[in-house]
Image 1: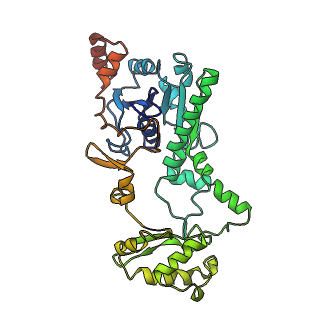
Image 2 (image 1 turned 90 degrees about the horizontal axis):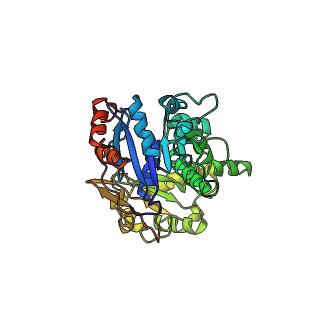
Image 3 (image 1 turned 180 degrees about the horizontal axis):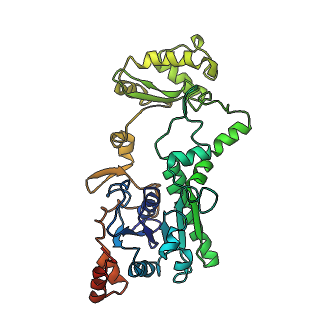
Length: 378
């Protein structure tokens, strides 16, 4: 393994997307990640293989059997990190809670990712990204003025406020372990992470620079120069010309005179300015506008779909996307000058590494066969 986390061993219990995403990040950066699949079961909402399980090892274990639980304990005996994304109390009932595993490995960092956290009145409640961001105050501001809030992609809580928060917590706990020599629980809650991401808006509001009414601020659709515009081919351009120098270049390329337009920061006149922009953008295709603004520092870019972003020259130049087992997907990030991450290896089939991992733990043929016969491994 290459990357700054080479030598780190992570054992994760497979779950829905947020925790596996965090483990994907750890694997991308060089950690050895062993993904424990639940033998004989599957999740209807699980992410298709080849993405969040890239560059990892897979073992299929029946966690409802005593023999399967023992396999987990053997796997974590020399591990650095254990990750689970179950509701509070589930891991303890299975016999793989923090206290169970610390008896074997007191230096183990125990990462837990949930929607509402390990305690509080909603700790055991069901929820999804939209629920977590709604309670965190991150959903209410999203939408046009006079309209209802609309759900963004499940990025804010699941992945930014969830998976990435888990990774940050794990890395912080590993750093602390260098001093204390002890493991600890990382309680990463998506509602906490989503709330943390709203810090900027709390600061702006406290300073009188953010209006509470949805869609009336410069960055939430209230400002015409921070918005998207349809082109002649039905595709879109994005503009973010906040600063005067960028705004001046924007008007120049659109052929508009600043003296004939309302002040860009006057949100009460934003619709007038927005119509002026819209009337010009609709006259050319996205490709034509992309060429016009290609070498102009006006903060204007094409709105690309996830399926075409990998073709943009900048993304191509930076190798921002990679092909893993024939599947185009985002590349590992961030970049490191001394310990660069490798292109991820293809994801294994479920349970593909079961036998090799067990042999690495010292299990012989007879014991492995006995586990199979007992249904403890798949």
